Length: 280
Ligand SMILES: NC(=O)c1ccc[n+]([C@@H]2O[C@H](COP(=O)([O-])OP(=O)(O)OC[C@H]3O[C@@H](n4cnc5c(N)ncnc54)[C@H](OP(=O)(O)O)[C@@H]3O)[C@@H](O)[C@H]2O)c1
Image (cartoon, rainbow, N blue to C red; front, side, top):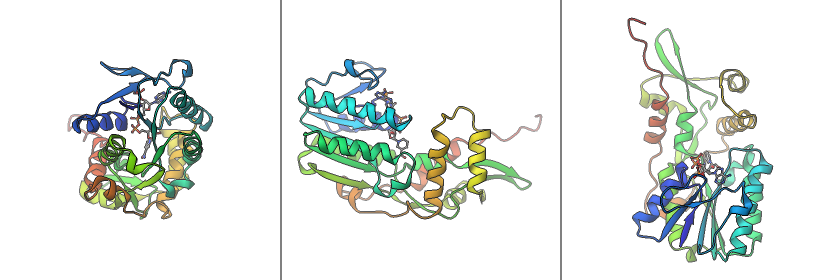
């Protein structure tokens, strides 16, 4: 049986759906398990039960400081070895993302995966098209709405979550050809200006200092580790460190990768503030 972790998250749920669509014997693990899923909370190591799992698809459980994230991944890998899992697939971060503030937790986990003694595959995921679109900042000037970002003219080889989920499902359903391989999964380059063009609004570039100020002063709800993480994404895109594309995703999918521009545009459109009504 294949078990997908983070099964109520965006990538995990899409991967589980893709596995089931392929007819694979797959289930999900989640902190909030639905019908037929296993309870799986990496922050509760004693409760991790992977008996009966042949292939573990470990979706990274980020969104915390490095020690927490690496500790979570170490706990589930220890359980995988103990419980007789036969192959581990880990969803990591694209190699070009080494400059990003959250890269270290991924690279440390890759070390753990390679050293755990089980056959493994590492899927180094590029940044999501959904993330890129969602990071554009709506504002307005005298002429109407604009989108702002600190990305400048920098391009991101953005990738849709759906493509990454399908690739993960393909690998997990038949891991043998992927044993010991690290796949770099990128999409095609897009810029903030191209997203803005599709939205029919101008794109204005802001400086990294202004971006960080907005994160710190105007973005309620961010956890302390998030402003440096987001600022690191902005500087890496702006300065051309994340634009390169590669052949691995198309090779795994057996088809062309999906154009990320419509997905990024939809994500940006979803955060567009409602136009003020004439009575307001
Ligand atoms: N490539 C990118 O652009 C990008 C962007 C953002 C994040 N990421 C990374 O990719 C991962 C998947 O992305 P996503 O879009 O699916 O994120 P997501 O929707 O936020 O899902 C992440 C899932 O991780 C699981 N998780 C968190 N803490 C956990 C814990 N203590 N034990 C077990 N599971 C835990 C949760 O699954 P349950 O709710 O089912 O427990 C959570 O829903 C993220 O966790 C992050 O590490 C990548």
